[in-house]
Amino acid sequence: MLLRYIVSNFKSIGHPVEFSMFPTEENVDESYLKTIKTRAGEWKILRRGCFFGPNASGKTSFIESVSFARDFIVDGQKSGKGTGINQFRGDFDDLNGISLFQFMFYLKGEIYEYGFTMDRRQIHEEWLMRLTKKDLKPLFTRVTDTRGRTVIDIESRFGKSDSKDRILAEVLKDSIQEKQKNQLFLYKLYDNGIKKAEKIVQWFRELQVIFPGTEARALPIRMRENEELRTYIGRALNEMDTGVFEISVASNEIDFHEFAEKLDLPREIVEDIEEIKNGIVSISGRYFIFAEDKKKRTILVQLKFAHRLNGKTVQFNIEEESDGTQRLLDLLPMLFMTGRTPFIYFVDEIDRSLHTKLSQFLLDRFIAEAEDGWNQIIFTSHDVNLIDFRHFRQDEIWFMEKNHLGESVLRPFSDFEVKDGQNALKAYLNGRFGAVPVIKGGHGCR
Image (cartoon, rainbow, N blue to C red; front, side):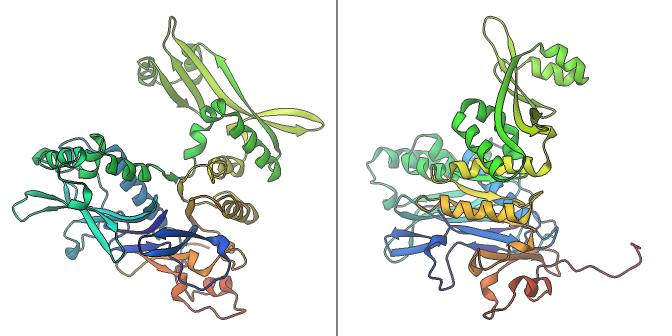
C-alpha cells in the first residue's frame, strides 16, 4: 500500500508537493481504512485519495509523475541515454535542475521508503530505507560527490557480508560508471536477481496508471483470453444502464493486405507490420494478432456489444459505443481485479464522459470490493458533485491549483475547517478552499 509520495520539478510541478494516505480526521467508519501491522505498531491507511482543481492545475502532471517514476524503476534505462525527464520549465534556482521522486509504502509487513533525484543526464541520489521500531534506517544509499563520482554504501541490514546477495550487490555498486550514471542501482540489483530488489520492483510493477483510453486498447485481447472478465464487464454494463447486455469476442483470420488496402494505410505502416512475426497491433480501434507458423496468419480480434433494439439483438463494435461506455471499459477491469491482486490504481479523469451517479457507483463499489484486500485508488476529477461527505471522508480529498509562479501546489481538504451542516460543495464553488478556475473579465467572448 502507498503511504506517502513526494515529487518535485516534473512538468507543471516545481517545488516539492507531498501526498499522503495517512488519515488526519477522527472518523469511526473503518470501511474507508486499512489497518496494517508494522514494526512500530498498527497504522491506519486510507484506501482512496482524490484530486480536484481547475483545468491545467497539474492534476494530470501528478499522475504522469507516478507513471514516469514507475516505468523508470521497472523498465530501467539504457546506458548513456540520459534520463528522459520532463522538468518544470520555470527553472527555479533553488532546485538546481534536480527532480525528486520519493515513495513510502507497505509491503509484506515492512515499511519502506525508496527515492531518487535526477537531472536530465544522470541520477544524483538514491536510497532504500526500512522502518525499525523507532525510525527509518537505510539499506543502501547512493550519492554523487562534488567530483562527479558515484558513491554507494550498502548497510549491514541489507544482508550479511558473506551472503550471496550482499557479495553480488558489492560487485554491482562498482559498475555504476560514467555511462551508467543514468541508471538506478535498484534496477541493477533487480536485473541481477537479488531478492530484496525483486520484491521492491514488483511493488512498483503493481502500480497501475490508467489514463483515458489506455485500458480499452488492450481489452479485446484480455477478454479473448479471460471469459470471466468478459462476463463480469458485460453484466456491469447492463447493471449501469448502458444498453449493453452481453459482450462477445469475434476472431477472424483475414488477409491483412486486402484489409490494409481498404483502410488505405500508408505503405511505411504496412511495411513495419509485415516485419512482425509474433505480436499484437492496433489499427483504427481494431486488434490484429500476428502469428508465425507454417504459414503466416493474421487474426482480427474485435469486441461485439449486444443491444436489444426493437425486439432484436443488434451487435455494435467498440467504436460505435458511446464515450461513456468506452470510459467504463477503461475502469471496469480495475473493479474486476480489486480484491484479487494488490494493485494500487492511479486514475486520471475518472469522471470523463460519466454521469456523477456512475462515477460515485464505481468509487463506492471499489471500497466494497477492496475491503479484504490491499487495493487503493488515487484519482483526479472535475466532477465537483463528488465532493460529498456522505460518500467521502474529508481527508480523502485534495485540491490542486497553480500559484502566482505558475507551479502546481497541492493542499489537503483536511487543512480547512468545515462546520457541521455546512455545504462543502457550495463552499468549494464559492472559492473558500481555492482550486477553482478564475474566469477573467474581458471582451473575447460575447
